[in-house]
Image (cartoon, rainbow, N blue to C red; front, side, top):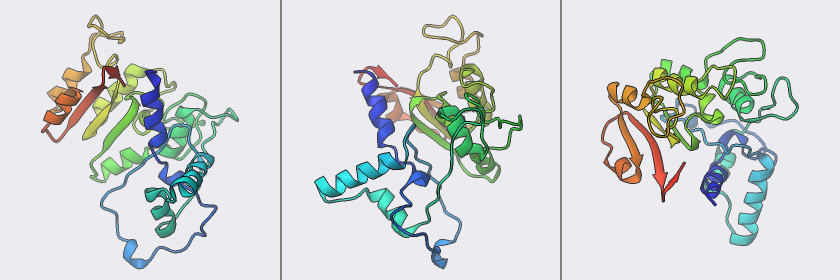
Amino acid sequence: MQKRPRFLLRVLCVAIFFALTIHWPLRPIPAAQTAAPKYILLFFADGGGIPHMEITRQYNRLIHNEGLVITDKIIKEGVMGLMTTHAADSLVTESAAAATAMASGCKAKFGALGICADGTTPKTAMEIAKEQGMLIGFVTAAAVYDASPAAFVSHVRTRRDYAAIVDGYLQFQPEVLFGGRRDQFLGQGEPGSRRKDGRNIIQAFRDKGYGYAATKEHLAQLTRTQSLGAVHFGGYEL
C-alpha cells in the first residue's frame, strides 16, 4: 500500500509535450502569444505517453462529460510536438535515458544521465535556463535523486550514483528542491544514511541559505527564497 501514493502522484502529472497531437492539426501561434513566457512548467509522468493520455481523456469525456483542462487548452491554443525517448543502446527505454532525451536533446545509453551515447555532455534545459537568469524549481513525487528529475541537472554514467546526483543538486543550487528520501543527504553514520562519506548535504544546503522541511508542518513554515525538502505525508516517506 505504501507504493500507491507515489504511483498515483506520478500518474496525475501531465506530460505537456507528450499531449495528444493526433486529434488537432498544428497551426501557427497568434502574434500575441509569441512573447517570451514568464513561466515555463514541465510536467511529465514517468512512463506515461500518448495512449495513457488518450484513454484518460476519453474516459473523462464519456463518464464525466469533460476533458482534461490543462491538456485540452494547450492542444487547442498552443503547438504540440512529439519526441522519441528511446535509449541509444536498447529498444526499450528507462527513466534515465528517456529523461536525458528530454533534458539534453540526445540519446543516452541505458542508465546514463546527462551523457550522450557519444560521450558528450551537453547543457541541459535547466542549466541553460539558469544561465539565462531564470529561477529553477524541482518538485517530484519520487526520490529527489530519481533518474527523471536528476537528468535535468546530472551528468553521471549511472543513475545509481545517488551521492553524485545529490552533490550535483548542491552545486546547481535550484531555488526549490522538493521530493523524497533523505538517505543520500545524511552523512555516513547518521541514522538512515546510505552515503559512503561523512558529508551532510542538508547542512551544506543550509550553509548556502536554504530552508529545510522534513514534514508538512515544516513545509508550511518555510519563509526563505531557497527551499529544500524531503517531506513525509501520513507517515509515508516519499
